[in-house]
Image (cartoon, rainbow, N blue to C red; front, top):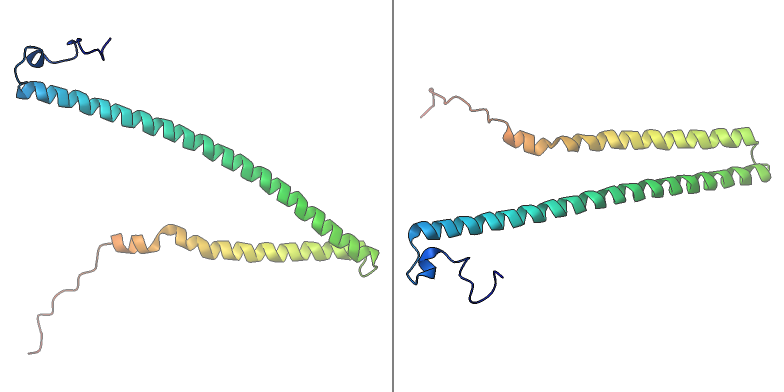
Length: 145
């Protein structure tokens, strides 16, 4: 068993013989320790990456289900509003449905305009302007005293 007190198989030869380890042996021990640490970190990163990927898939699926549920709830609400308008003879059914259609199209166009306006910030404009080379002005040779 490697962890026993009497086991000298894991110790370097200089340590087993009672003398101080040489620089080469210390270097080998450090290399072995470094490889172990790097291996452990890579295994941990791989496990966490897999866990994050699985969580992302679950979040996306739950988001899609939520979107479907909210869409059907919205349709039920709009249908109820149309029924109220028709039952109280405020509007005929065809006009009520056309009104709902027009309102939905108007809201969709407003959202598309807002999305286009916001999409400009996706291009990292400040970062790009900072990365562009600065335009250097040529020094004035005709400076007035």
